[in-house]
Image 1: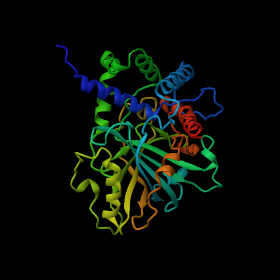
Image 2: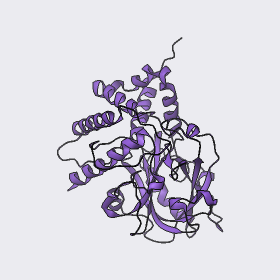
Image 3: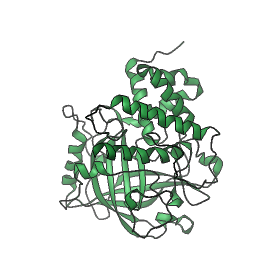
Image 4: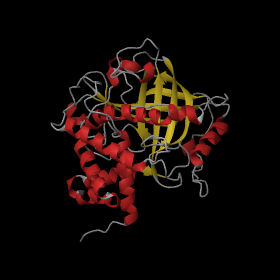
Length: 376
């Protein structure tokens, strides 16, 4: 017996699938001079370069179709931000074999910025959505050894995370097929996954539904990198970010306080973020960056970001501390939206791995250029 899927649920599948592209799509030319060194865990599809070029062309068509002459180009996905907070990152002690790149020196500190967001920019905060947290760790000016040229020569290590432990798109080819499908009939995008239900579509639908959530505060959930990143030349890593109790603080964690979702304010998450800062003051708000490290290529499966890593257990690698007793904790809206967060803003030791991340390398560069040129 065939199970009926409601129109509402189909629409949610489309939204979730498109939000997944936030971690893989917008646009640039795949013949860009930006290069990277392959990792021993990577296996590139034969048609990948061709697919990336075609995806970029399709994305440009979609952007052009949805933009009026008077509009600026906003972020293509995760356009609705709840705020950018200044923080201080402290590297935690690790086993000697895991002291790599950013995590080489225990107790080293860096300034950083965290941006919280919704996956779908136009959706009310009251609705289920894929939530995002982007962290930009600001590195010293003399830092070298990056995976790609750094934006405006500002060296940083960026982490892009969402409320889902695995991706909702499994390959570059799937991105291309989905975009073709959407170009033919926008209203029936969900049917792409339904049609491919027994060819991996059910797994992608499940991942999307798990990532979509209602939240009371951007601090109340755990965020995940979902895709994999290099950890040196012979290991891979995935990251997660969650609020934790600062040493010496007695403030109750946001996830342990009443979880109330506003029924009236469609933009309540930005308001709640400020309220959480006031609630914690004068104590700081802390978040822990955790990492799973995988040394087995077969288990790492860096070309399969839709597969959750069940092992190994995560290890705490850094603490992010947000001061609440300073008037400049939060960036202005313009400052926040002018920032560019990209997975390829990365030290070579932590460069993104896998086909979707190779797509992101080209995509994010041109997306930001498009936004800046439009604003100017």
